[in-house]
Image (cartoon, rainbow over all chains, first blue to last red; front, side):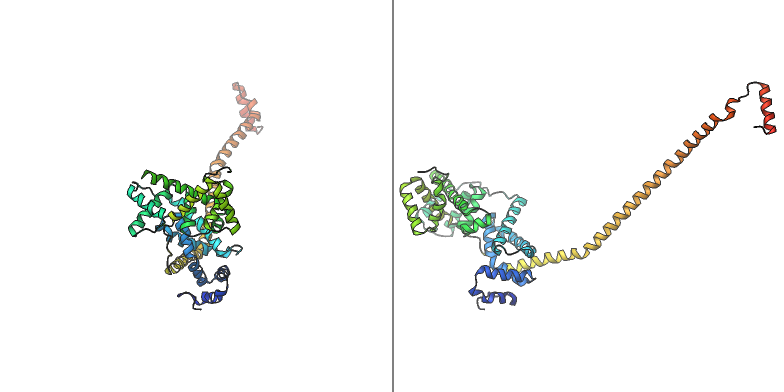
Length: 214
Length: 167
């Protein structure tokens, strides 16, 4: 019982009590059943369990931190409203991630979000410093260096196609596995691997060009 | 070396190179890839680039966890939405009934008015024309048409006949 986080209701806690011995998917299944029967605390627990991954997914796709929370709330609202129709043939997480992907596409389409456009390029000195970090595989010295490195990376990512950018961010930054990405994007696992490998090559070409210019 | 894909690596090796990079290959598979890399410059360069991309992307920070308050906020929004829909749902049958009633009344009124308009405009015209035609026909086939008095004697004869009731 001590594993149950603070603030979890008695109903959700009852479901979560023997969770230590069961898989996460099994726990989700019980919580979904309870939520389908009208248990709001069970759904709240489902939100708590999946909010971090939903945020990561939305953040990886929208690439705009300021909109992530709003879209995430909308995702959980849609999930709640259609939960009665969810037949549990797939894992709850897979179902939720598909809702998330659709909501992100909707959001991008409605808002017609334009990619960030940078007016000026980084200085040669900044690029050299970044190359030093990447070549020597050492972490950035301080917050300024880290912010600088991120800024160049943002610019490099903007040069990629939407698909390449999302794959790289979801895999390398947000920590989704190839199998999860294949499931979410409804692609073959091998296709995801090939696309990822090619996207890596493309971002490095942009990077090398920028470093050579510097 | 096989046909190169746009990563610069052999196309049939690309998926395996991604696994190799992630360390997901078994010992034998990993050795086979390493063996291929010793012989293939394109794949070797592509793996080097991909490995650097991993280091580069590590500089980005993942989206932070929203914290324990998010689930509560999301549930509040869900309940607000449910309450709004419930409110709509209570009045929905009454609104639908009122619309149906209004539509029926409108149709009945339209039919009544158009019937009245047609009746008022068409009936008198038809009666007048029909009556005029009937009168014309009566005259055309009447005996008087053939007996128009042409002399003074004819007129006197006709007056006498009328008085005697022959006509």
